[in-house]
Length: 416
Image (cartoon, rainbow, N blue to C red):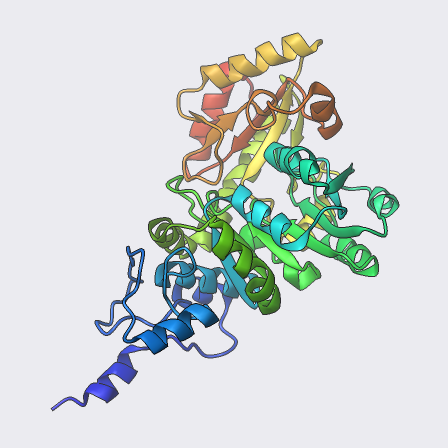
């Protein structure tokens, strides 16, 4: 006869041995399975949890450590948080409804009126708007500086600086910042460094190991990997997650839904494989574009022509990621925009959309989409011209992708 206690102990294998590699953590890290012993993590679609008695209920609500209400915690969401934290080398993580929700949580948790932020001017357009416009209304000041010029970051520091924020590589020009140097600068000023790791993911880059204090993710992109759901996350120390971000999340409610958490949890299992394959595809397309006479410049960190190529290869595990952008040749901004639209509209395989991180390749015009709400001066400062096209490369055959681009760029014998 089977001993029930022994059987339960055998099934519940949440504790993993030390020293596992990232590929294994991406598949195995999660909460313990239920009494049924499911091998794939369960999806817990519930808003509330039945408590055994009033005293236990009171204790759980006071401590906010066990499950009481899904705005504060959910087993599926917590499995995702545990897995992502393990992959990033973080003590803890907190998941949010979107990537922008993660930045909102970051700002609400760390900053108050009178505080100052130094941010790369090359970050995602909505990030610029959130810092400069939305939180500017509440007395948080932000200075925008060059992504790559450390002297500008240093000169922008004030006694009230509490946060440095950068994404690397940037969207869409793939500029790369020196994470370790920014961390040293931030800590010397008594501030924290947050790095948006959306483009690389922990499969290629782990900013905490380079000195960053917080890693932010738009999980909508590569963590999901198939363009299905919205998600975001912050990875940091246990103290920051529990004492700073957790209370704000419980109050403000930018909570990730259990279903979306389950989708991203499954996406993490193939993250390493996808990032390697998509990075290889992107490099092949980038090299093809560099040879095309209709292309003025290609922005991609794995190309030797990229200004931060050596730094990117050191920080990003020797891979460039799966996003590139390129400028079409034109004499005027008007002609550049027309040429870019012609390339985009001529495609038959690529998806015309504003997302990235999908297994399906996506093409977009940043000046009128992701950065369309910025002023022309802000776009120019960020290097976003009318002839710039962003390409997020998926898992199609490379020759089919270059053939599709050639429809609008014109014929070229661009093979190596």
